[in-house]
Image (tube, rainbow, N blue to C red; front, side, top):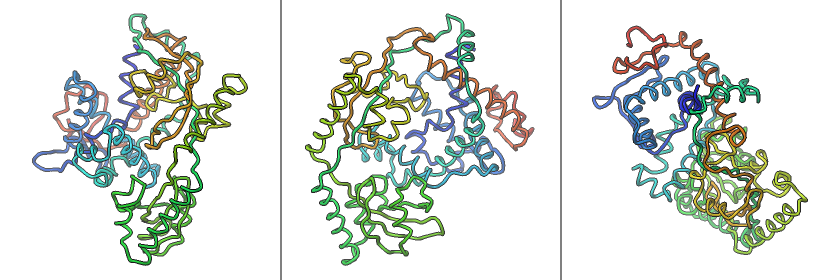
Length: 463
């Protein structure tokens, strides 16, 4: 199979549900004269014509020259996701409400960064952040269930160097793709510490807010909207539903304080890694609870950032002198625990590769990398994190490739990833082939000409 054809193929089998965009967040179809059901999987998992139209519009945004025939592939992708969700349900591979909430929060933050502000996102989507979250909760839940089922199917699929070499050898020379310029980049992040004065100021500010709520009868929900530093819940009056007592991504101090409360009660001030909180219990349902909270985050001063930059300058000197390797320095000095699992290297979330295409990088990062040599370290700098917070870092340029035809020397990780994806796609196909007879499935006659369904045994009333 040609490499670029293999890449194209696995996008449909392995990227299920990853292209949720503002198009899909805007759409809230209603079955009626303007819409219709075009596919049914199992007892009640349906796909609407409008669902497909949204996916098609979204894909067309990415590639304006795409033809209408891609709708067949998109419909197949959507049906496969429904099959995975149905099987996950049968296998009791459930996802927690906390996982769903976390996924929604991350996606909303990405959109806010993309559009520049929360207000602009709401303008483009035509809905408030709260509406976007609540109306699309089931969409994200299904995505997570499909991913969980897919992970179970593929958990034992590995790729060896010999298989990578064999895969590469099957690609005709004239079919090797031309890769754009790429880099391998790492970073050491040091989060500035907060001064005692500003830390105390944040705590006292929250004390006053709590006093107004408890002693003066101010509405908790209103005060959260006015003062909370949590963008994920501020527009919803600070509310989070289905907080699980077992954690599920919540700070343990937060959970412990929440589950000591009676309905309507407001907690004392508690401190977590995010700042200072007060919590109000809305209602408790056994081991889960609906709560509201107000977060006040201590602000960092210019002096705080200066100290962090000075520490990074010392770390940079240790790297240049060779006292530490980059990975060792990440483990010892970085305050970003997640980065320690990758040795500080930035990973492309879509491909899983450390090779990052220049066109996909932040323009400020590109300008900085242009001044660096391979193996070099940037000067300490301030930057904006994925959460929208200011922090400090030094950047390491491990490797740089110019535009070139694919080869094993420069592109091993990319080719390895595609070889693995092809193997995963084959395993997914085998799973589908074995499972399809176990499901009721109906597809609208409009799509009976879709060749992607030629080998699927579908209800005789459907095609």
